[in-house]
Structure formats: structure tokens, C-alpha cells
Image (cartoon, one colour):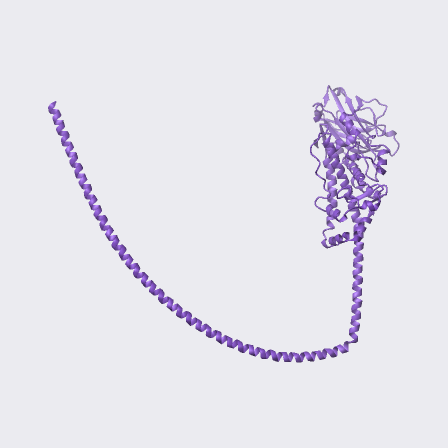
Length: 602
């Protein structure tokens, strides 16, 4: 389980979409909560689901009033409800019979003195939704489990209903916390019948958590939302009341997007396989660009009821809680693609929305392609087939702009999903068949042309046989003339070859004489260069010897001058030393005389 914050605050417990509600006798409850059916069948609540509509329930059950925001949302149309006046079959469906709003109810059940209750089970008062009577069943100490609160939705007086009765419903049960952000929500989808007349969660929540803010003044508050669904196998149908749907959209939008995007990717890969054969795809391109191909694409139609029945069969899974949102999105998508009673020729040129690929009409029971089919196929098999526009803003309050943005996104996703379903179906079953027929006709024409060429060749062979003798005689004459011509040509070639050989010999002798003269001139030039080089080296050596002698004499003179200077410096030092010694002796004598004089005076 992973908690997801809901638009109302609190946490709605989401489970993997692939998990389904348990079958009769199972041990795993709806959406992996560890619960099971409240009664009826193995693994149930032991027959506790039997209830009488006349029995007084525990606690007090009231209809949950709409908040001002809920009332406003309920009153106005959202993107999934359609914009403007809706006519034709869709309008009749929206205006006749029970609507999702009439099949929806929300209730609040308050159980006072909850901690003092010793009963094994508690039942709410019976309430009516969608023409059926229901009640909520709670086990304060758990149903076949310990330390858990068990909650179930049950059909009242199920054993008194007509044989074979069945009702399909989606419901949400919440245990309210004094801090709305901590309230516990769980929702599921189930087909109620005599064998499975109650459905819910054995392990709705741990008892230790019930006292953690879920009881105020020892009163436990349980809220339930029940949506009865009238499914229609013939075409996508509306399931949810607008306010309830908007609440579920905030929780399951990512799951619904995942379902639709996986389908789009599946069909994209299927269309991409048709492009793997480059030659065949090029033929397909040429076919769809031709007048014949364009006309065939426009004439490729399918009955709308067959197509829409396939959409319901592909996407509606009564064990998936997201199926109702998917159906609402696909219903909106079908309605957006419906052109009403518009003539086929006008609908084929329809381009009310950019990149529109198909149109359908329930009134005419017809679906077909429109616009540029080749561009639609290339776009559908591209990296992001019918990718959603990202121009919606990311801001918005909790139930205002954000809810409308999510519904617009879901409506557009439903339209593009239906469009891809119809485009792939029409391409595979109609356009490809027409292309294969055109290709077969082209191959047949090529075979006919080959047969005509073979017949023409056979006629030519017959004519050749009739003139065979004349041709043989002519060939002999031509052969003799050719031989004579060959002999004359051979003699001329031999004479020409002899002249060429003599010319080559003369040219060779002249070349050899020129080479010898050139070699002799080169040798004499090299000898002259060697003589000049030797004379230059001799002059260089003599100049070097003279320079060396001059440098040596200069060094000797400099050495003598340095020696004389050194000697003079030494004599000067000795003289200065002697002078210093004399000065010192003189000073000493003077000091001695001064001392004697001082002593004599003393």
C-alpha cells in the first residue's frame, strides 16, 4: 500500500492497478488490503451479511451535505461532461434514463461510545442509492482477523431480490481523523450479486491506529460514497458523478494515463512494423498519395457500433478501479469525434481539430478516416503518437483550476485513445486490404505484360526460322570477308610493328650516347669541385694556424703584464705593512714616555 494525499486532505490508499478484487472463497481482499468479502461464500464473515431493511442500525447515518465547493462543481459542466448543447444519440443518452448523478450517494455514519462497544459487528441504517438498498458493516475487533478494523458495503435484503440480480458499483469508504490530513480512504469496484452481496476490507486499518485521532469524544466517523454503474457493452458510457469523478481523477490520473499510453504505444509499435519493410512502405506511400489511394482511404468505413463495442471490450475491466475513469474519458472522446449527421464527403475533409485522423457518427452508424491519412499514419507510428499538448498551466487551487486541468487532460487522452483505436482498426482492416488488392492488381498487370512480351518474342523466333538459310549464306560471306580483312590487317600490323621496332632501336642508341656524354660531363665537374674544395681547406688551415700563433703571443704578453702588476702590488703591500709597524712602534714609544712623565710628576 502507498498513501496518496487526496483533494480533501487525508490519505487514499492506492494499490497496484493490476490487482483485482477477490473471487468467492479467496483470502486476499480488494486492492490487496488483506480483507475479504463480509459474508456469503467461503472466507466471508460467516453469514453476518444477512440484514433486514427494517432493522434499526447502530449509531446515526445521515446524508453527507455538499460543501459550497462541491455544490458549485456539481452544478457546472466540466471538460468530461461536454461543452455546449449536445444533440443526437449522445444527447438522448445524457437526457434520458438514470444519470450518474442519480445513481450516486454519500453518507456519514457516526458511532458513539466506540471504545465501550462489545458487539462483534455494527451495522448502519439502510440507505438507498441507484434504486438499491445498502448498509455499511463494521467489525470493531476484526472479521476473522485480529487487531484490525474490518469494513464492508452490503446489499440489504439481498435474499429477497429477484433471481439473477446483479448491480455494479464503485464505492469509497473513509474513516475520518480529527486531522483531515490523516483520514484513511479506500476505494474499489465490485459487481454485487447473490453470491457476493457484500464487499470490503478485513484489514481496513489496525485497531491501534483507531485511537490515534480517529475517535473524537469516543465517536468514530465513517464516510461512504457509493456510485452505482449502468454499464453498456455497445459503446463507452458515463460512470461517475462529476464531483466523485473529480476526486478520483486526482488520485488515479497517473494510472489512467498509463493505461492509455500503453495502448497508444502498443498500436504505435503495430503500425511501426508495417514500416519495417522499406520497399512495401514506399509502395504504401505512393498508393496513399495517388488519386485511387486517397479515394480508397475516404471510402474505408466501419460500423460505429462494432468499433465502439471493441473499445469497451478492450478497456472496460470490472476488476480495475480505474475502469470507470477510463470509460468516462473514452465516452468524452467518442462524443468529441462524433460528427452527427454530417455527410460523408464533408466529414472526410473535416479538420476542426489539428491533426484529426478519424470521425465517427453513431446516428449514421459509421466511422471513417479524414484529412491526410498518410500524415496521420506517420504521426501515429512516430516517437510520440498523438502526444498530449503541454500548454495547460501547472498552477491552480485544489478544486478549481487543477481539477479542470486534469479533466481536460483526461478528456483529450480519451479522444486520442479512441482516435488511435479507430485509426489502427480502419488501417488494418480496410486500407491495408485495399492496398493489398491494388498491389495484387499491379502484379497481375505485370504478369500480363510479361506474357505479351513472351508471345511477341515467339513470333520473332518464327520469323527468324523462315529466313534461316539466307542468314546462314550471308554469315558465310561475311565470314570470308572478315577473314580477308583480318589477313590484310595482320600484314599491315606486322609492317607497322617492324617500323616501330627500328625506331625504338634508334631512339635507344641515341639515348645511350646522351647518357654517356652527360655522365662524363658530371664526372669532370665533380673533379673540379673536389680540387677547389681542397684548395679552400688548405687556405683555411693556414689562416687558422696564423690566428692561433697570434692568440698565443697575445696571451704571453698578457701573462707578463699580469705578473709585473702582481709583483708591484706585493711590494706596495710590504711597504704599507712596514710603515704601519713603524707607526705602531712610534705610538708605543710615545705612550711609554707619556707614562714615565706622568709617573715622574706624581
